[in-house]
Amino acid sequence: MRPLSMPLIACVALLIAAPRTFADKKSESKFEVGPAASYPSKQTSDNVTIAAVAYDTDDLAHTAFGKMNPYQSGVLPVLVIIQNDTQVAIRMDNVKVEYVSLDGSRIEATPAMDVKFVGPGPKRPQPNTGSPIPPGLIKHKRPLAAWEIEGRAFAARMLPPHESASGFFYFQTRHQPGAKLYLTGLHEANSGKEILYFEIPLDKAR
Image (tube, rainbow, N blue to C red; front, side, top):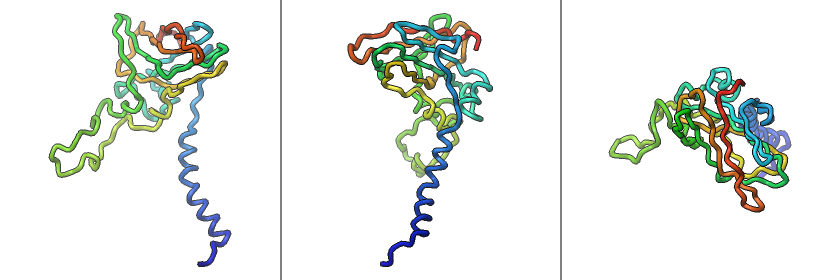
């Protein structure tokens, strides 16, 4: 077998790399998040600052989700920024976040991977009940099946000293005046000590 010539090798390498290049450009769509201290809705406790912003307008949604507005489909995205100004790392793998309305009603965050099943369109795939068409072959359009939903969800599990992490939590609710974000489950990595809960107003000026 004749060895591949250099021009042919270069062409093969280009074909393999091209899809990855396009994916990288897509995943790097510009979305900027400021320091936690720069947002009006925030709380500081034990040298940890958490800020939260409810993305309930078209203008806000456009900055993070492009043409898609999750709020129009019944899902309220809340951006959370956590700044660790302590001297120890913070574990965040057991964080629990709730949307608390003025009357005390609590709504737990919907996992990012489940958001695409909210609203119009099919729900989670169900076992085949006799239909001649396998469920996986039935194509439906899901308004919230966009990469930004999971790609920009809060995913950090550990936060080193003097670092910050940010991302979205999603709630199946309409945004209500006087609502707060209630966050628990932060622990010091070395001692296991739990950091005080955070209760952040969501209706301050932005």
